[in-house]
Amino acid sequence: MLALEADTALGGLRLELTLEVAGGECLALAGPSGAGKTSVLRIVAGLLRPDSGRVRCGEETWLDTERKLDAAPERRRLGYLFQDYALFPNLSAWRNVAYGMAGVPRQQRRERATALLERFGMAAHADSRPGTLSGGERQRVALARALARAPRALLLDEPLSALDARTRAHAGRELAGLLAEAAVPAILVTHDFEEAALLADRVAVMDAGRVVQIGTAAELAAAPASSFVADLTGAVVLHGEARPLSDGLTEVTLEGGGRLASTDAGSGRVAVTVHPWEISLEPPGAAREGSAQNRLAATVASVTPVGNRVRVALLAPQPIVAEVTGAAVTSLHLGAGAEVVAAFKATATRIVDV
Image 1 (cartoon, rainbow, N blue to C red):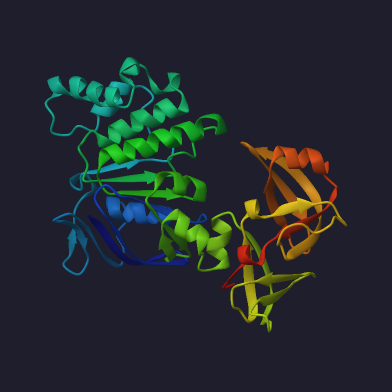
Image 2 (image 1 turned 60 degrees about the vertical axis):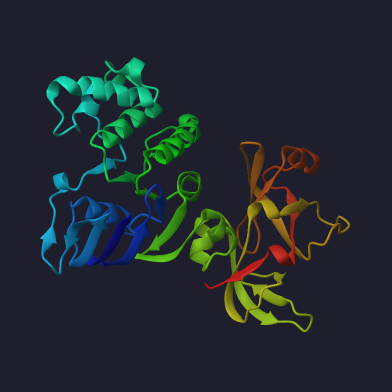
């Protein structure tokens, strides 16, 4: 178990949070730049001392400001995977890994480093320098180095951001497997909710130095506590004024025009959210089909293929993004400037705090 309590001033930001990560669990800290995510890693690693706080890993106390305990970074037995991997360009892969083996006899380091590289499928590149390796290969060397000192916990700072789009998905799946194998508490920093969902068991959403919601990725996507969390998960967020109707539904009058119905209760100024894949597109004037009560006239701004889906950005009273099939794009002749109706159910329209 890795436990952290911190309260400190970071320039104009106040960082206040309490976190616990179980052995073998990966916790993602997700949020925008400047939320304090990387500062949390630095506090755990001993690179930043908070005004007050504690850091414990298992039976060891690494920091306790009240008791004036502050273990040096090299005494904390942490594996730290930096955003750019921070490999030494003049050293081979195995020497990069061996660099982290403090206390291991020099004559045993190559054997142990090669064994770690083999675990990550990189033994054949043991003598290669980082400049000759792909982004995914450098990531595996960096992770092998992070594990070289048998760490009590792992810290990962934006581990996929240095990869290009072609290798990010594959490297992410590999990293998820390697984290499971490591079987130690891990804290991952990311601004990308999809990356957090792929790699982490739980996600702590941070904003302005505080954790505003924590849970599994599925829990956050299904029941965001606020429009901020909903937006981070990739949901469409619209704002308006809510009032209850006599039939048990809530009507939301949108800023800029248009009305929506929701099965959630709400009153006054609210935000409503709907997932892009729950929005269907219809031609204007088409006969209503199905049970979707919400319909907004919109103009297509852009059409972008994403995997086996197509993301359609729409200009409406407020911006909307829908995800549809390629067949729908063809049948509706979707392209920039096309007029459509965005339709979605009242049950898919969730009301959250602004």
